[in-house]
Image 1 (cartoon, rainbow, N blue to C red):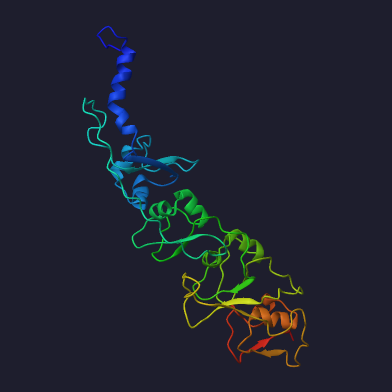
Image 2: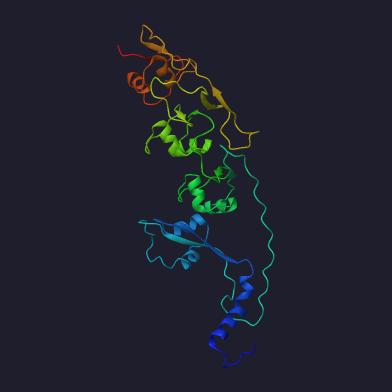
Length: 317
């Protein structure tokens, strides 16, 4: 085919674009983009979270005229990864050089699954975007699977999930310790927070305190019902909890109830119960057929803590 000044303009334009770009499009792009919902935040906040230059982020999101992204609906923020090739868009008669071969990143060793869910351990200096990328999932999915918000930070050495948590755990119950909250319990056992709220009759604003028995696999028994036979999952208090492999992790033990479930013990003549080392408010309440709320009111308690030898009122005089 001979190209002359009389050749139709569209043909000449097509050939010019072919010469300019066919070398670039046949290789892996040096600039890639992804998107995330930025509702309610500023580009500066998103840039810090994604560990990227704010000016570069603004260059790809010129649609935003205000300082803060509206929160009335989902707004997609473009996150650029990589760099624009120098001279991109400038026509040249020199054939494009093939991109240098890149060495494939070695996959990160898998951590032991929790509740059958694959996990990944955060490395020092990683952002949410970086760990999500290393785990092969999107930032949105990472936040959803781990029940996090985009303004939260991740901790080096902490374990995170690569798939959605399950609706119930492999153990039946867990007794909380100091420092626990509903998210940490849900994360420890790979179960969704909304399931724990449903099982334990908790609202969004309810807080858990040390000594609370959290039901992990089914609803909390009503007064007078028999509890499950698996007992209460407690952690070895001589060691702190670690998200490690099964060989080195803190052992979870199951303690059977002191009294047979469902059996009501006759009230003492004094109306007082002397606390034993194995007692909890829950076990004492079940022992005498009263509620935990009644025990707390009768004994002026603000939390669930008990002291060995303490005398508890188990009936109203």
